[in-house]
Image (cartoon, rainbow, N blue to C red; front, top):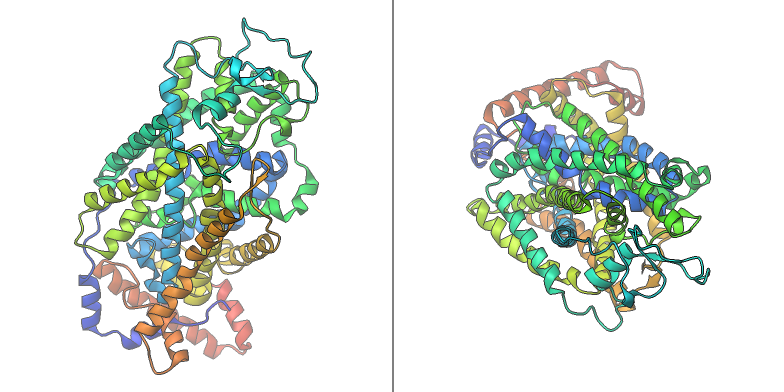
Length: 616
């Protein structure tokens, strides 16, 4: 199970000196980061983004608050860290993007293309979130923040987010009617003009949000137009600036009246929820979105590293910092939710506000409205921070797509591909700034992002650990990092990570329910479109596998399949000297394992188990 085929034996048998030379010469010199710190900052800006400030709090909010933290941390160590480190290794070892790395197992090429399609889906709606932050950034410059007070047309059940000097008597209102803050009403009625349903269409895009969307894409293009040369320099600011505002927000949140109740709801675990498989599934999905695992940017960024760069240290720093940032953002926003519940006279934190994309644009603005001294300045800083976080993440995702295209068509100029994809991204994103845009965002995120990325990540770990082989992969890791691969990594990559993901994925599909938004069902046509999107993403794996087998047909179906899952001559270090040393190292490792097997009196199965626990 751990080593189905030995790709190195095939490579050494079929490769000649001439073919080896051609393989290396076919590889155009890949640019590198100016220094290792640029790579680390880029990874931080990619992983620490809106997934922490926006997605993590409302995912925890929807899954029992504190009960979500335990499965999330367990999933981080069983799936998140191993997957993150694995993808870093693949990129740096091969100096290839998320599609070309599958020279390690050519029939799995569709995994890379499927991940690219899912990444495109994420990019399109992620940019609409940037548009919202720019919109709020612009209106924050007014003398009075527009979401601080209720407007007459919003009805009598609206409560001012900043009641100072304008205290409204809400005690006489009908207790059966749930109150809504002015920050929530402003977001729903003025900003996105949300529709109650989409049975009669999505509506026309708002011109203000469309302009914000265009500006967002201009910024994205300017950051990535020169590849790692420009994005690496911007990464210092994109990674560090948000923490200044996050810490200031935390200080403000914990001092609000009622904040303690919200924070306790976030931190106090409900042990019964640990038995709910849905919570574990959401923990995996959140881990993927927060760390950007399974999308391709980790592979892409690390492919621009020097071959001897210490990625182990960087992987540990980024994954740990990402978790701490999520906890920081969670405590901040739940402190704010506790204050919201206090102001709205609601005892249950769950009933404070609708969950969804708008949480960050309702709860955070509500807290800012309560600032007594120049709330406008803090609003500008906060939404600029959100914009910076979003840019850091979407730049990584967009660079992944550009790299996939440039790796495939090496004659294309990087900036031209970046420009073309930015234009296409803007046009595709306009649908999300319509009144029904949040409905479509939820739909695309669910079918085109969540399940596709989940399924393809399972295939990714299976392809590396079970098909290429855990021993072969660990040999590559040892050669590159000059350090032994610990039992923790071997156990996770080979057994714990893929099996736990398979169990959670199968259960989540078997218990899937009709998708809803704000408690309302989608039209049948929308669900059909969602399943088509899911099918397109997942079908990339079998389609590209069949294409490769047909293209490399070899004396019958079974031989062709066996040949398609063996590493091609293109797999390995791109540098000629590193490649020569790697081939010698692999031969030595294979010889040592063969010698142990021939001298051992253990059964074949027990010998494989013993080899699994040994690094060479």
